[in-house]
Amino acid sequence: MSSSLTIQALRRMAATIEQRSITAAAGSAVKWKYAVPEPKQAAVLAMLVATTSPASHHAMDTLSVLFTVRSRMLRKHAGEVSFPGGALDATDSSILAAALRETREEIGVESVLVLGALPTLPDISLRIKVSPFLGIACWRPYCGGDVDSVAEEVRHWGSIPESQMGSVRVKTIEELSMTMNRDEVDSCFSVTLRDLLDPKKRRMQDFRDRTGLKIPVWNGPNNEQIWG
Image 1 (cartoon, rainbow, N blue to C red):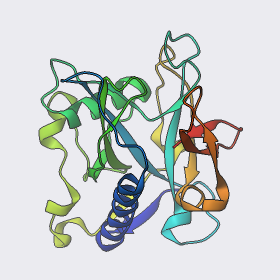
Image 2 (spheres, rainbow, N blue to C red; image 1 turned 30 degrees about the horizontal axis):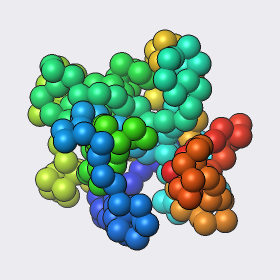
Image 3 (cartoon, one colour; image 1 turned 90 degrees about the vertical axis):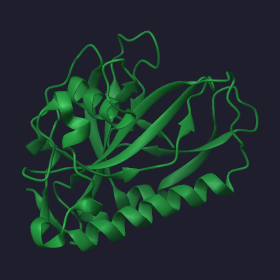
């Protein structure tokens, strides 16, 4: 079943996640230098959903992060775990619009409340700059509607008066009623915030053939590998 979050809880949670992300990026031994002067632009949406059967009423248990498993028919990154997202299109009014458009095209989800942006990161080729956004899958009226103008319609949570917002009803994966584009996505799953933020639930692993580059890895519910 869906859960409800107050605006205060959303603000605390978004601030915690953003601060941990910034701290992790600042403390990394890897200093990213792009391979090209003007890298291509892409965006992804890290979307929070309500946990179907939470272990407690704490927000870290009641909320989970949605992941997609890329289609095994794709030429690149086939079968890998990812967030919904893709390259900036000429028709996109902003990099945020690209993330929301790709989310709609890949898994058919439009009802998203955008909580904020996270620090940009390069892809493995160092030729693409990826802009991650943090959003929450919720019931209307707190979400964008018309996909063609979604960048203008999506309202940042910080700009909505508390008197108008009250609480936000968050959808579970089941309530999303996703329509997956099988040319791009094989399946979806979620992992609770508590598990993702628990150091005991992840391991450091060498990334492919990049000697000395260790990246945190989590396991999904069906042993999917989530590279962090």
